[in-house]
Picture 1 (cartoon, rainbow, N blue to C red):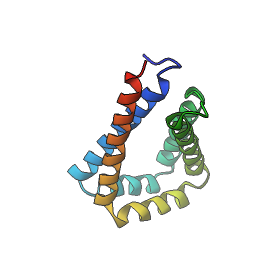
Picture 2: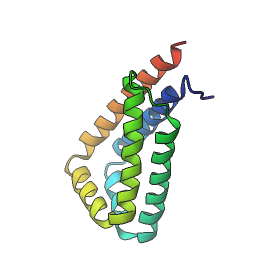
Picture 3: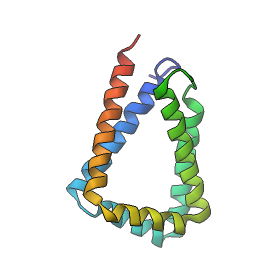
Length: 135
């Protein structure tokens, strides 16, 4: 269970699990991300729903994570929460444009992005486990 002392570690851990799972999913089924983005671009309802959920997740991470200017991981998680919130707002406001840009970025190097996702996820899990071991 999270508390102020370890909430940053738990958020980092679950973000890491998400990143690893997303990367493995793309490696397992190449083109999965591109197809998903195409379906988002084709559906205003999915854009709206995704925007609301992304906005809420980003706001929650930003608001729940304790801000500690002396803690690099705490700063990174707060910035990530803010970025996720902004991403949700962009999907709601200019979803067609935002998803078109994202689609172009991802289709250029799917396997590269999947590898980066897995590497970043493993790094986040490692950082989280180190953080959660600290008293």
